[in-house]
Amino acid sequence: MFDPTGPAAEAHLQPPTLVDGQGGVAPHVLQILTTEHWSLLSSRSLGYTEAMSRVSMFIAALSGAVVALALVAQATDFGRGFEAFALVLLPVVFFLGVVTIVRLGQVNHEDATWVQGMNRIRHAYLEVAPELAPYFVTGASDDEAGIMLTALGHPNRPKPFQGLVAAPGVVAVLDSVVAGATAGIALLAAGAGTAAVLTVGAFVFCCSLAGFARLAIHTIEAGRRSLVIRFPSST
Image (cartoon, rainbow, N blue to C red; front, side, top):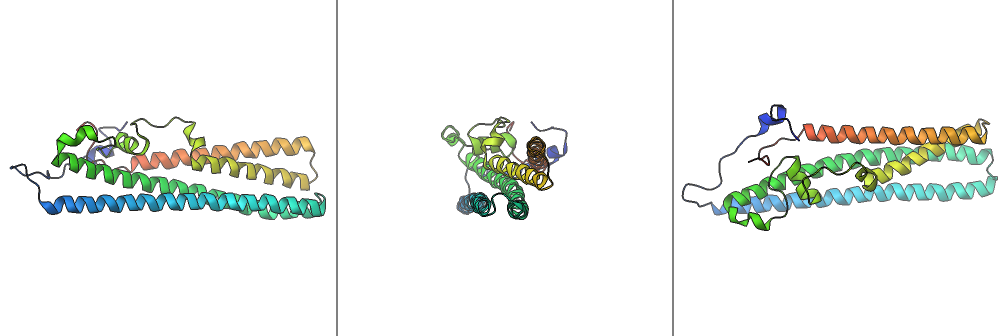
C-alpha cells in the first residue's frame, strides 16, 4: 500500500514510549490524550456538518433553478426568453456544484487527518494497556490501512463504484447533468436540431463527469502522498 523505500518511510518516526521501566504512566499523559481525542472528534463533527450544509445548499439551488426554469418556460412558451434565462442561471448552478465538490474533497482530506490523529492516540492507549486490543474495532495505526479501518470498518480501499454512492459523486453526476443541459440549451438557442442538441449534451455530460472523476483521483492520490506515518500496521 505504501512504498517502504519512498518518502513516507522517512516519516516512520518512533516517539518515546509512554510507559516507563516500571510499567507506569504519568496521570497527566492520559488526560492530555483524552482531551486531544475529544478535540479531534469535534473537528470531525464540524467537517460532517459543513459537508452536509454544502450539499444541501447545492441541492436547494438546483431545485430552485428547476422550478424557476419551469415557470419561465410556461411564461415564454420555451422561447428566447427561456433560453436566455437558462443560460444565465444554469452556469451559476454549475459553478456552485464545482466549488461544492472541491470543498467536499478538502473536507474528506481533513477528516482523514483527524482519523489519523485519533488512531495515533488509540495506539498510545494500547501502548499503555495492550491487553485492551481485543476490545477495539477501530484502527490503531496511522497508515492508510488504519485510517480505512476506522473510517469504513475494514482496512481495504473502497470499490470504484463507491465514488458514485458518496456525496461528492452524487453532486458530480447532478452537476454534470447541469453542464449537459447548459450546452444543449446553448445549441438550441443557436438553432441546432434536436439530434445535435442531445448528442452534444450527452458529450458534455460525459466530459464533465470524467473531469470530476479525474479531480477526485488527483485529490485522493495527493492525500495519500501527504500522509506522515509514525505507527504503520506492521509494527
